[in-house]
Image (cartoon, rainbow, N blue to C red; front, side, top):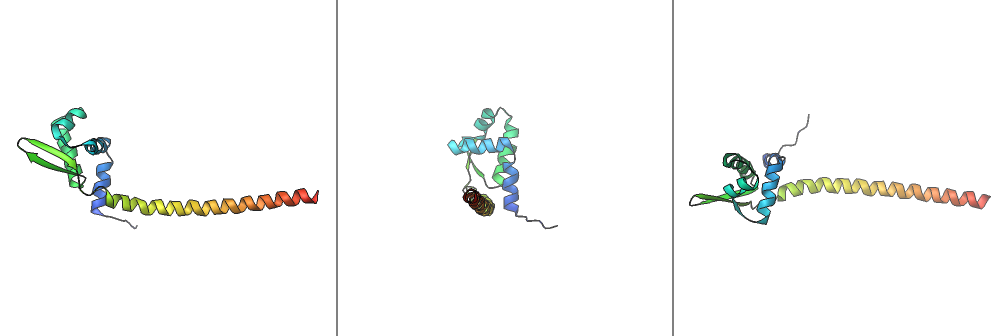
Length: 123
């Protein structure tokens, strides 16, 4: 069995597999927020939000900074560039396959048009 493994991508996609963590990223896309504010926003305990933020931080998707008693979260510097590059390779592969399918369908349509034309002329 062949497996492709990249610890960074594994961590990112694991982090992104949770709806709350995706929501946290959406929220941080609008602006930095404290863990307390995020916990309030998502109606969860501070401990629960800290766990979600920790997973996002480990994946490099979020950074935190403690100023006084407040820990502020912001989007990480990676901007999902590696993940986008990985997905782009598959997007290009599927685009090429759909282009090939379009060519086959076009060729079949041309054959059908020629057959229809020949049938009309022979009547």
